[in-house]
Length: 439
Image 1: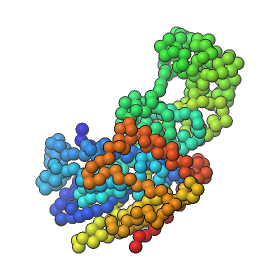
Image 2: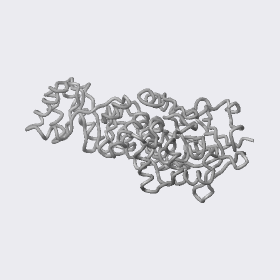
Image 3: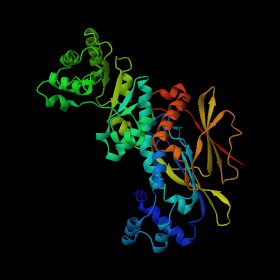
Image 4: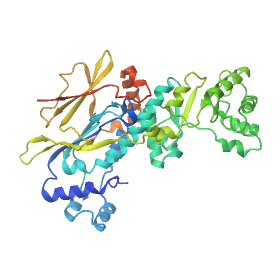
């Protein structure tokens, strides 16, 4: 299935006009970045890169797409001929998936002809804005949870394909499992799930429901004990499954108080190894409030798949450098109030002191020849990798392996954050972004 129509009309009308006036082939550099961090958060998490590369493979204009463009008079005949043979032949560098980003970070740099790169704007933004928003929220929840595992269970709170993407982004940012089977199939994410309240309501008694579930799934299962009376539900669960019951789940009530009462009851019944999982509209603040409670695991739905109140990362895609009519490189930038961008091709580094991040250092050059190779930054880590080289996509970022690599990278680089970055309150970015012009 082609991904070429996951776009906005004006990208193709610009393409058509550039073919007409001769600027379509002009070498250009586009950059995807965020001017600020959503919600006063202290860092952002890059997610969606692997999905974007997979979609780029299918960015083709077939007969159906071309017929629609022709019938709707979206572009002229010359543009149709160009799009019939379109393949992205440029190059893309970017932050590794799972990497942290800050205001001004050049998350993606797309290089090629104007025609090559301009048509990728909406696709790149729709993927990275959504997935990075989810991953940023998920990372904050993971930090708040500490060593306790988190399961993503928000599919019913998102559009069907967004739900699958959100499960992947949450896993990259520290969640350990998902309820979404398609995410498990596509990317190898561990899946989880047992029964909802409807299972208990289906049976003539709570005890019958618990016995049927244990018969089907074994005593390692987790029983949902709050359909009726929680204390009675816990007692019934242990009577049915024995003291080796895997876990109980709480989905209602004042969770810190209820969790403490349930832990005490389980211990009194001899079920000292039975774990407590809590759900019920959790976000990073609720998880942090449960830090001192006897909770073993969390299940998070709505908040994680909607970015915990900030469903987009606010990234933009801008032309930052191009060749002029003489073949010379010039930096270009938008100067509108509140939406200023910085022109020039960027090289990005995370400056560290004793292993802790202290700055996002970004070197800026007008063209290609002067780009910073990092030699001048011995205390910094280079942030950009080659994702596409003259049309050849690096497949290591896709599929099961790419998703796992992104998760491992995120958990590693998160250790570089200064302590102040771990707070949940609104504040300035955890580290400053420093721009350095390359002569």
